[in-house]
Image (cartoon, rainbow, N blue to C red; front, side):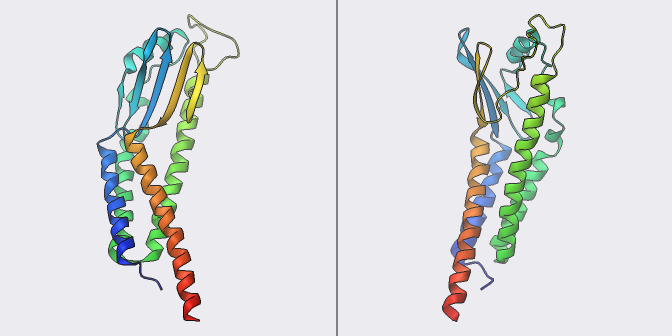
Amino acid sequence: MESLRPAIRLVLALAALSLVAAFFLPVWQIQLWAPQYPEGLNMKIWLTRITGDVDIINGLNHYIGMKSIKAEMFPEFKFMHLINGALIVVGLLPAFTGRRRWLHVFALILCLCGVLAMADFYVWGYNYGHNLNPKAAISVPGLSYEPPLFGYKNLLNFVAYSGPDSGGWVVIGVGVIAVGLALWEQWFAALFLRAKK
């Protein structure tokens, strides 16, 4: 049984098309709280840019020797929107063709993109938090300011949070749906073959 059922194809089409939201919503966020900033500072990461309290965060980071955050630091901004567009196309392939193989490809690519994105963000965060200006106004030997990859972390008198924003949750949701459907269809196909015997 190679062909996907109509209901599965419809869900896949809706899931793939929902990735369009990532073009218009931030995919990641970094937030900072401190006694002097109880309302918090935020930085929103989109597919093509950074927004939020970036200037204030850069001003604070200057004192501890961190580089200024600029869009030019992220070459990924030049092609992330293309990757998202390609994911939409690949996600629509099993919906239109009904081929289970394309569902597996879509689920695998989504998982791979997620792993690569996290690895890329980790490398950036590590370099950003460790390569400090030794002549900074505040310099503590051996101390680094690497932002958390995911979740919360104390950085001096700040609490930092890093995690998906609305667009990122959409992508994660599509990934969960794709993997879930791939596993379900694999089980359903095995059940069908067993019934035929």
